[in-house]
Image (cartoon, rainbow, N blue to C red; front, side):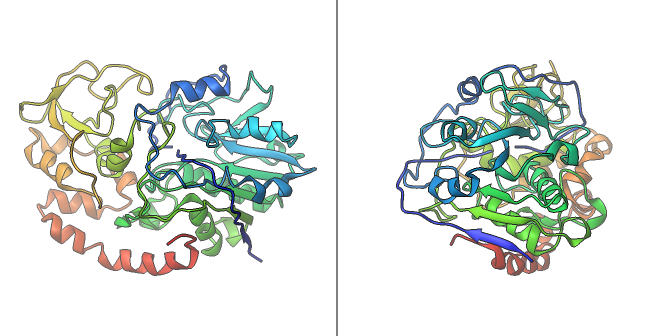
Length: 414
């Protein structure tokens, strides 16, 4: 039986929150050392101004979930984005409320959100609370039974950005599966999707399933992570069709058309609202020889390559926070600056097509990772064949319409 509850209350806080990212091949390991509050400082947005100040996140909707945690042993899946409106981290908040938190489980980028995309994460210990931290990125993407021993209830609080290859929804899948197998209820604290009104892109083909694409959905799914959890359960996507005992704590005063700004970076290479809006479109460059801005301060807001024609805009990637060895490290890249363009309202292919058409060596443009990101062979074939973008978009229509119809069953917000 599906056990899904949606709670509401009338507390009025000012809040906004968000969170993770397409992964590449694992690199070096990373150790947890700093305190939670240091995370919030290091990951703060430059322009921390919520545009919809009446939104109450699931984490701030605390009267709906605190009674469910009383006298229980709790595990929490979270990172630097798991904060309340006053910037208190969820872990600190629960401990202050005398909730018996046993363990923290951390996704890609780690508990502090500072590790590179694809970087393996070690287990560790939070120096502030003394709580053990279990890594869910590396060789252990799904909690093992022994790692869940003694846990009565799991609480999930991660900020998604609405893209299929942003790996927090993959972590959600494995958490739900582990909870179902071990008969542990899961509470998802919902957060707004910054790209929540956009449903677009090719549908993932099952044979191309990977950690950056686990379900047959479009590249932009237009759902909050709470709605997405309901879909995972309802469509029986978990192993053997099992279902998790799921409770979604919703956001209040929210609809998916609202504009808002995140209080912290959801991951190291999404520094601001512009990067989050352009992320799905520019992340496709991660499967090519074109840089999406890693190794600069304009990640996912610019693109360029040494193989593109010389232009008035250029940049040189260098190692920095979140990119220890960026593509084209130390090489001059020519491309395009998108930092000031208007917000996009669909998956944009024009920059990818333009770069392919103008590269000096088309045979080396795409790499194997592009198939995982696109989730289909067709997109690369269409671009290489010179199919116009309008025709490519038409080829998505049936899949998108079918997905939108299925999606209706799981929506919480207008």
